[in-house]
Amino acid sequence: MADVFTPKPVAVFTTGGTIDKRYFDAKNNYAVGDPQIESILNEACAQVPYTLTQVFQKDSLDLTDEDRAVIAAHVAETDAPQVLITHGTDTMVETAQVLQPMLDKTVVLVGALNPARFKNSDAVFNIGFAMAAVQTLPPGVYIAMNGRIFDPSRTRKNVDANRFEHATPAGTKG
Image (cartoon, rainbow, N blue to C red; front, side, top):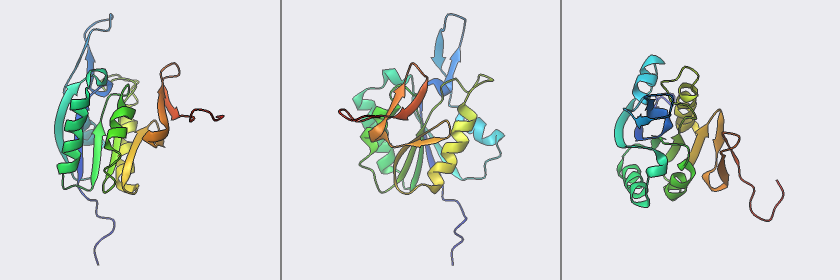
């Protein structure tokens, strides 16, 4: 009998976003830097096998429909049944919605509201939470942010409150 507790390899795709940003001055001049997830997983002594592919190094506001098609192609082409995608939070929901037809895999998108390089960042917690989520959730596409799992078809980023929340469908009460 196979060991049910042996983790399956997770395909990790990075696209950039706040999680990888590095700032140069107080005027918010920044660049999307190298992916931070590998150093975060190493520092956490993560024991999950994974592969890492840098797909983009962009702010999510700069991602196009063509970029989302490239992300979808990477997810479709990987043999891994579990996929973790680091992504900017501003358009994470849109990318997740594009990926929703890929129901044969467990796909989790994760980001950070503050860069991983910042001491007060939510990046480390979010990545650890997302790594656990991708291994335990059934096939489907999810967003993992700040200790919660979201269905992309019913989720929005509340920019004013700086958090993700379940969206209320039009014409219904919250």
